[in-house]
Length: 228
Image 1 (cartoon, rainbow, N blue to C red):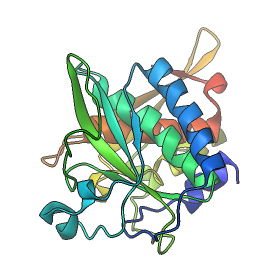
Image 2: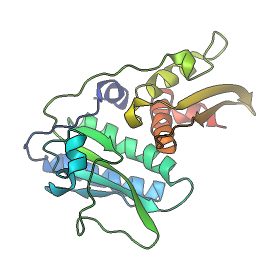
Image 3: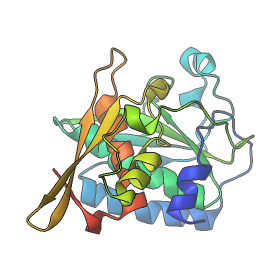
Image 4: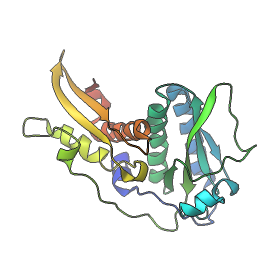
């Protein structure tokens, strides 16, 4: 499965089987985690065979079942931390999908279990990502129209449409999709695209935008444009 195929196949999954994670797949994930921690200046941690984080009342309210493996998405507190968590965390989500695993971004429905993770000075946890073999492959949800989140027209490049379509398949908090993409034209020989976050009382719009931007890049190729 390619990353483009993973974008189309990925759906949020909240119920997991008891099947142990493949050791080979875990090694691949750990290697990618080391990479995103370095490039994204993060402290993502892969917790395995630990059920307590998803056994509390919030997890039951969120309808999580059988979650024993998850990613702790942490980093040093900064204005752009949520953006980086989303952008680099989604790289792990799509990689897991290519390996035959399922995932779910979790903003609130988890319990921080002491001793299961390590935080260095100044670090905070922004989200968890449940990971494992899903009891189902998840379900599709209604998404916004492309014209509601972009300035796509007959005058914009076809690749810009592909990027926005991929962004619309990105997971967002309660499926809010509070983001937009704007094609700005060419500057110094390079296509320019601006990504905007919208307003939401729920929050998580910075993280959502980081996730959506990575989907856009997968579909388009970051070498073909610059973020304005």
